Image (cartoon, rainbow, N blue to C red; front, top):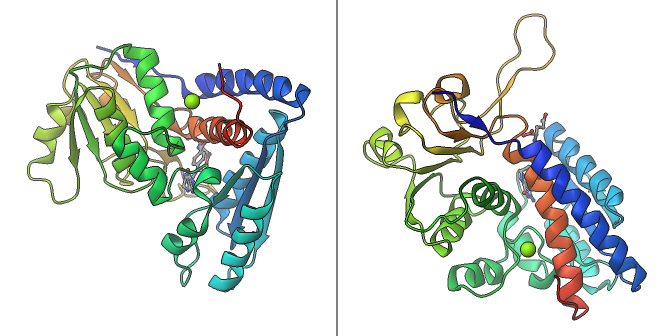
Length: 293
Ligand SMILES: Nc1nc2c(c(=O)[nH]1)N[C@@H](CN(C=O)c1ccc(C(=O)N[C@@H](CCC(=O)O)C(=O)O)cc1)CN2
Ligand SMILES: [Mg+2]
């Protein structure tokens, strides 16, 4: 069997194009969605992601402002910036790029963001609303995974879904979204007994562990839909300046067993930024009492 490729890059481009049209319509009504991205420190991958967020927000017609702070920034100064952005009416979405440099408390920073502007969906109010089935700003990566799953499979009701990983950014909200879609959900992690067997029970397997190519072909039920959230940079080959980017799934082996699979790169990653733009439009509309079509 050779799996169908789920093309996240194309899916994300289509979503961004639809958002650009929606934003143009809102601008005609005097509302320009505004996104503020806060980057602390010089982590090279984070710098790339923040530049992409700025560029794609601008391409969709939004106002996007990145705040770049030195790695030595004090917690209080970071919190003061968040409070300023919370109070700024032209800013509808705020996110702090993760991970933060050592010494900064990410949880306290997330707690300081106005939940109505929390376009990463990480504030406990949004996490609690998601878990309670109340409309919430939903974390971007799981949201993107759900869009691709729905597009591929339609109704997910009754499917056995296994999420490997239990982070606040990915594993936990992913499990909540799958549950809300009537899947039977298992959240597996580093302490799970017989992880390969648990993964083999999945009709939908979502890998979000951050361990390169950990999930091999013999962990996958034939025909399963595999969503690979991992973005792992391998050490560079001799003579190369950058290592290859791989997922948590051994793609070459897995594609012979799975029914459908997301590649890395070009799968889940691009959906993260497209869903961030979607959340920013959502936050702007809610703040202005506009219901989206
Ligand atoms: N505050 C947040 N921090 C982080 C998040 C997040 O959602 N909110 N997610 C990741 C990083 N991230 C966005 O912030 C992100 C990661 C990957 C991609 C992406 O498009 N990846 C490409 C490959 C890019 C490359 O070549 O390096 C792909 O998979 O095709 C976009 C956004 C952690 N931090
Ligand atoms: Mg939506």
